Length: 230
Image (cartoon, rainbow, N blue to C red; front, side):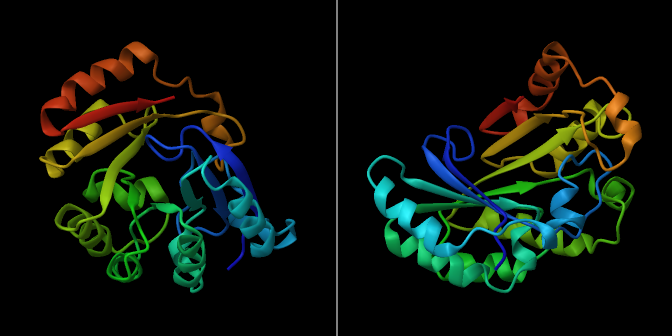
């Protein structure tokens, strides 16, 4: 499985834990506000990180960091994900997966094999607007199945959405929240322009912290916890 980036210490990618993070390239979405188009189009020319390098660091860092985040890109599009997660798990780390939820069978397998401790599922938009936002064909049933797996399973999880003025706004967040009522956690992520897949989005002003707080107040009744990520 390709790994094109490795963060030896992250304070924010695994809630409540210090963690390391592997960046997995490739994605089946083309969200216009995405700022990591290099992971979509240019990763074959990027320097890859070897698992031996990661493993050496994880052995040295045991006791200091306890979590390991697998992010991207979209990690679940790669066949080697389960083997990679097994190897990291064997060293003694708790594993968090960042995913867009379009590969529910792969997520289910990871859960069945008990290699996941936390899943962050990125909900891009209300389900009836998914194609418009991700700019690609998507089987909405797959996203719905991934949501069901997390809500019914024993793995800790969160849902989250990036809010983008003119594309995904407060009314969309409320619609998403209604569809996820009773879930554990929801994260409202602030859009950050700069190097967007669609250059027009680089000139969009993100929602202010005051606007994000209003969104949080709007959807807080639907979840046990709502966070803002800036």
